[in-house]
Length: 165
Image (tube, rainbow, N blue to C red; front, side, top):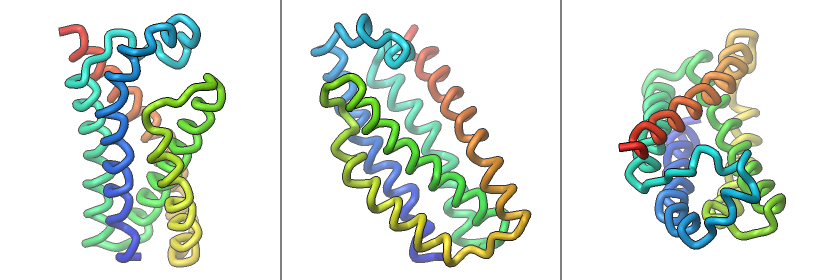
């Protein structure tokens, strides 16, 4: 497991660097995206790189922190949480690819999503065989998914608060 645990925050930051660098440029060059796809772009209406970077940093904290905990203190609960976070990140890549197909346009985050999706799927498959999935581990992983969704909402609120300034 230790061979894979610290890959999670590395993959996260590799992907999110593309988002931080590309989204400001993308929205400035494609303002019609706010009109054509408001349900996708609503939280990016007053986008600033600073607000977005702060949101990414806020999301990075649990990825990095829990990966370190699972690395240094291996156990069923931490492995379950880590696995749930890996599933969330893998789903995040799928969502970016699906959004790109839906809007019919290249969006920042597509390149690293295409690169990271097979890698994260490989890590899912490899670690699935290494983790002893008992009830506690499965519950930990299952509860992590909604917790990370709530964390993403918190990150978007942080971004919106900073973007208003």
